[in-house]
Length: 294
Image (cartoon, rainbow, N blue to C red):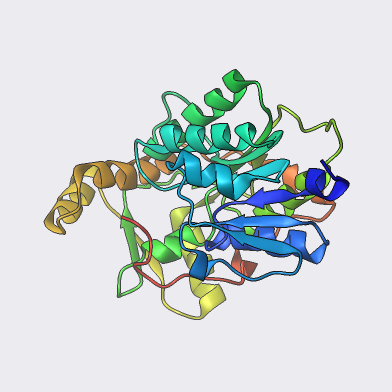
């Protein structure tokens, strides 16, 4: 295999907020890339990058074709509740079959078998799969995205949920992308980050009321947080004809914050990138209200 082929990085999720940032940073540094997506029309065009797909994680044949030629796979999590393990395992096994030797997996802070947040339990399963598979890997447990409360707001810019006075270590997409890029560039036969779990957070843990207030300041729009009980949160979502599993995921996100399960603040961003973490109010990108999956 050529030197270039050994240095090629495959990046998934490139049509999303995180994957697109990782791909752009690697392109700026001249890293050969395979940009993998389910909808190739939406995959960005970047210098030194080849667009691959359509390829869904669950499609082993398509993933083998899409990942052929890569030595490192940046695996940005898929969305399906309860099916992440199967989809991620299929993607990783497909990559290994065609020469991928290292996986950089984007997980979630607080991941664990008994985590309150439903998605965090799903992510823990993928983490365990990577350990048991024996593939060289690094896990990035991302803090709660600073943009998430803005996406959860309704048309009146109200964020409602059972978050109580708990705190979360919110983090920007750019900081996560910078950390992953730095580790991806360390592409020798060994890295100090092999087998590591890196918890990527911002500079402080904030309550939802504090975070939403900072979004209001940053955007100049009157976002506000209104606490709810679990019963109120369930009833409101049920009336909106949301599925039970979606309601569980949404409510459990707030409960994890309420219980302090996602409040740890780490030095991973400055330690890995050499630059301080970005204050959340300077995230620079705020999604439209109501754009988050609920």
